[in-house]
Structure formats: structure tokens, C-alpha cells
Length: 253
Image (cartoon, rainbow, N blue to C red; front, side, top):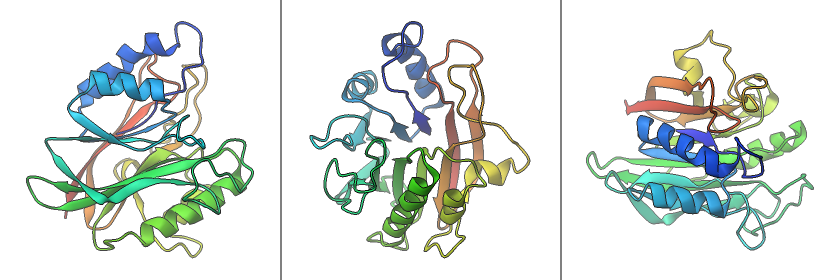
């Protein structure tokens, strides 16, 4: 599951305390093994860790002190073992290892988080990358290049990867095409939802029901895995966030 949780800045009924039970219901109902979140402040992470002790969480915030919004990855402790030498968070910046860095002068710093997990039952490994792209197209282009390079240079290149996130971009934008393997990209991911619903034009950002854009939240895959199911979880009232959550059930080929 990928889920932009919306920073806690809105008044009632869209304040975080009102939305937390709605978010929790979606997570409990769909019960993801892996969950990539965006706009996750320390307050949000603390509440989710309390509500879902069955998950471990990896990632930090985007600021210099490692606070602020994060792109954390939650994973089921009874399902996966974490490779403790292969996980982390990087800045979307010319100095990705420097917390809080923003050398591309974006409105806010941006980051991505990754984990390398082993399935306890099958013993198979998988990478999960989770991100939140910036607002301007040229910034997204730079971010896509850094992200693709990092994925391509992952420690175990034969291990499949999942990429989740809010990319702030429609499917036909250059940054998304780059992640799909065009324009000289070092990787060629596949969009799980589009593979299963090629003619669906559903959107994922809705501003608490006031509008609906194109799909900007994605679950991409790379390697010998295939999508079995994919869903945009569309609420009609009492919105959990200003984005719809997206899920994908995948299988190893």
C-alpha cells in the first residue's frame, strides 16, 4: 500500500485526530504486508506505531534534524526480516547523504526511503523504495534521475524491487516515463495499476472530495514479479486523507 496521509494542518473534520481512526480503518481492512507513507510527521508516525504494533518502521524526516515530513516504510514483523545493512533515507539533492539538504532549491526538501527485506516463509528478498516527489516538473525530473540511479545501483541488483509513492505527476509526464524506462533511464519499472486496468483514468488526489486529479500515487515494480490485484481505495465521505490509498498484490514469477 502507498498512502499520502496529509500533514496535520487542517481544521475539523479533516484534522489529524479526526482522521486517524479513518486511516487506521483503511490499514486494518486492507492489511498490507508493506506500507509506504508520505507526509508522515513524527506525530503521525507515533500514532501509527501505537495503533499497529505488528509493524516495524524504517525512515526519517526530511529536515536537518531528521524531523518533519517523512517517507517511512512499515513492514510486518512476522512476515519479513530486515537487512540491517541495507536500508536508509536519502535527500533529493546533489548531496543525498546530508540530512535536510536541498541543493536544487525546491520549495521543501524531498526524500526517499528504502528497505531490503527477506520473506521469512519463502526466503526470497525484495527491495522497497518509497518517496514523495516535489511540485515542479524540472524538480521531478532531477528526482527521478537520482531515484532511478539509486535503484539501479542497489546492492543486490538481481533482487526485485517495489517503488511506492506520491509522485505529484500524471502518467504521461517525463519523470514518470523515465522511471518506466524511457529517455535513457537505467531502470524500467512497471505500473501495477495500469497493467491491470490499462483503460482506467481514475485519479488519486481529491483534496478531501472537492476535486480529483489524474493518478499521482503509484506502486511500481522492477524484476521478476507480477501484479495480481491493484486497487485505488475510493472513499465517498469522511475522507481519511486528501489522497486515496493505492494497493497492489504482487507475486514472484
